Length: 228
Image (cartoon, rainbow, N blue to C red; front, side, top):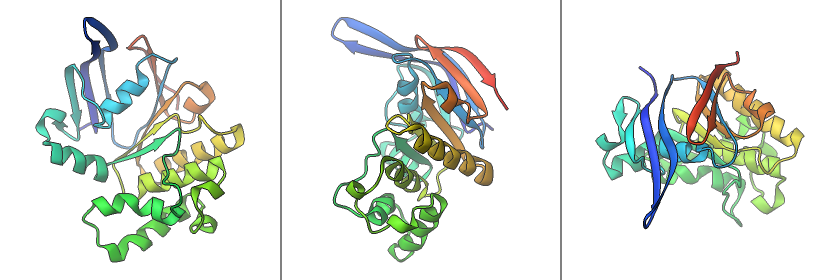
């Protein structure tokens, strides 16, 4: 069974009498363990799709199945639990809490989980080691480089051992070298742990770190391409 199945998905934004389609009958599936890049120009619908897949927004028409259930099968409480436990998010602007240490930023999702507080530091240090940030655990975000901030954000996304990591333009605020480091970390997470990665980008060289690319244009899939 696929982790994600989308069938004839539509999203229409309405502002009074004006209706703007963002997704136009999109269908695809993503298996567990895939690394998929969703690529397209600004306004193509890729970020709208990620928000729907991550339970951050609702579609207008069509079907979206996550882990065998449609979003309509989940209560609001279950949606929050699935988003916290089974999904990890990495955004372009890092979204780290200021004046809060790297360690405490990374542990934050655990405060909404059922995991015992006595286990938090051990879990956090494990993911911190994965992103090679052990020398920065006591630093505030203001003391980190852009690449280090994004590595902290990745560690935070991994802390609850999610089924899937959604990465929305994770290299958009980074120089080329830092961006490549971030993409190699995501690639290693996918290859070593079999974790599903769904990446949003408009850059070809970033998309090529994935194994499959969905090309979007005007709210539709223009091409679904396996690259390795």
